[in-house]
Length: 382
Ligand SMILES: NC(=O)c1ccc[n+]([C@@H]2O[C@H](COP(=O)([O-])OP(=O)(O)OC[C@H]3O[C@@H](n4cnc5c(N)ncnc54)[C@H](O)[C@@H]3O)[C@@H](O)[C@H]2O)c1
Ligand SMILES: [Zn+2]
Ligand SMILES: [Zn+2]
Image 1 (cartoon, rainbow, N blue to C red):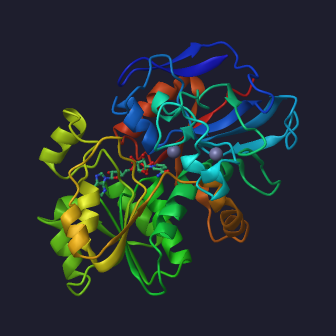
Image 2: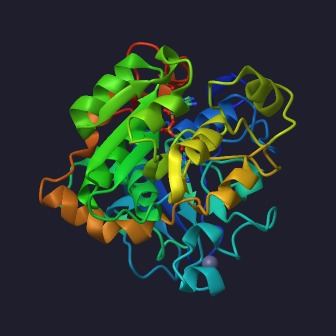
Image 3: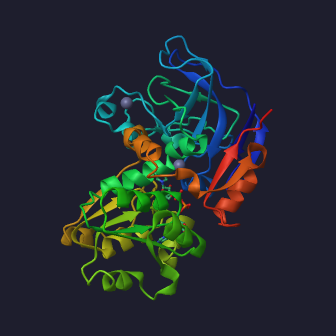
């Protein structure tokens, strides 16, 4: 089969790989019809994620058609159209029983903190991902779900991560009616977090980035006020000024480890790798939330420590909430919101790229070229 293959930082190829096979009775093999490239994939592409091995196939956002099922699979049969949450999880361990699917204890022998993620290095289990013609899906009765007939397939692929994560970011903010919510990052996750904040009762939603074309999307798609942090000497002072010098009630970090905005943090966080990424956006979140407020972190950071302003968070009495998204927990409510027309996820899709050209997709998304917000990878129709 054809598959995206990692050949080192900034080197993506499409190569021939052996077809995945059923390795456990509860496995399924899925023929991928649509996949996506995520901001998280950029951390891999830039060589920032530990234990990203040469030959690994990325891709944790994908939908497809069931090609084959193992003998114990009950919920799926060949030919079903399925959407697969990015988490690999067993569904029955201590954590899964409590809805913490992203912290499953049975799927990742390489780390204790995080569970399994498709196509996301051996640090998250070494599972090959869905930027390929076929992918092996373990615990096939647990994660994959048949796509409802009424659901658009592009909306379905966005539900496998970006939308679920943006919504989760807003949920972790514990938004109370009328709250002012600030979202750092106007990528797919930030856009969905901003849109979701309204659904949870926010009275004011502000999005911050430095890419003007993404801020434009935040205004149109998420009806947000926007601030370009590159236009202010100090974006924190500006956030204070616009919130009666109190700060926002809730701040969502939808940027993560590769934040711009501080040369020192970037050099130590992403070039020298002395930190688990550059915590600029997280520190800005801590600085711009009001005392007693909540900071929700869905931007991703690497396993080691980062220079986070923890003392300030303590002295302000903040609540800090975070996790990798337990995707399927968000689906029932999101299915309703899409069906009822409150959300149209694929409004943020800017590019549809054939698998054979995926390297160009990575380059364009990474360098933020051609107005790129969310690139999808489309299977060869043959
Ligand atoms: N927790 C999870 O389960 C989960 C799931 C998906 C993605 N993520 C993470 O969420 C983050 C965002 O994902 P995405 O797909 O939207 O990525 P993206 O790269 O498309 O978007 C990030 C945006 O942040 C902006 N930015 C950079 N520095 C900033 C700063 N200091 N302040 C404000 N904005 C800044 C960039 O210009 C960009 O528009 C990534 O770190 C990704 O790994 C986490
Ligand atoms: Zn993703
Ligand atoms: Zn589990």
